[in-house]
Structure formats: C-alpha cells, structure tokens
Amino acid sequence: EEAPAILPIAVSRFNEEYEKIRTNVDPNQEIQVGAGHYNLFGNVRYKLRAVVHHVGKDASSGHYKISRPNNDGTWTVVD
Image 1 (spheres, one colour):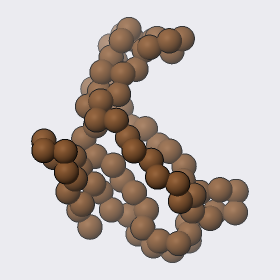
Image 2: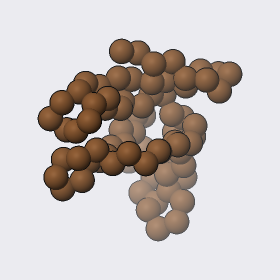
Image 3: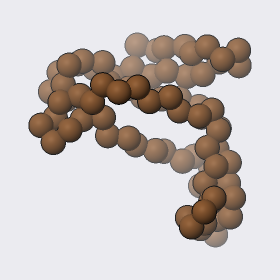
C-alpha cells in the first residue's frame, strides 16, 4: 500500500468551551511522516501547501481564511 498523495492534518484550536486557543502555531514547510513508531508507509515527506485558519473570537463566530507559503518565505492570505 502506498502513502496518500495529500495528507490533511487538523489541529483543534478551541478548548472545551469553544473558546479560541490563541497561542501561535508555526508549521514547518516540510513534514516527515514515518519517523519513530508511526511507520505505515516508510519515511514519507510532505510539503506544506496551505493552512486553513479561523478568524474570530470563538467557534460560533468569524470565518476561515487560507494562507499559502511563497517560495521567498512570505505567506499569501486568501480571504
């Protein structure tokens, strides 16, 4: 069996009361899956293509934006 071509990863940024957790997350541009004990497909590397993030004070309000990394290290935000 082969590793999936696209690997979606979800990180919940709300607590039990649906309040936003406001600490920063700085994702790596490359993610290696298979290191350590989680090795279903061998070592597979994925390149970060986009991040979906919530803009608003809590889970019941706001909207989502997409940010994608550029080759120069900057990010483009799509609203």
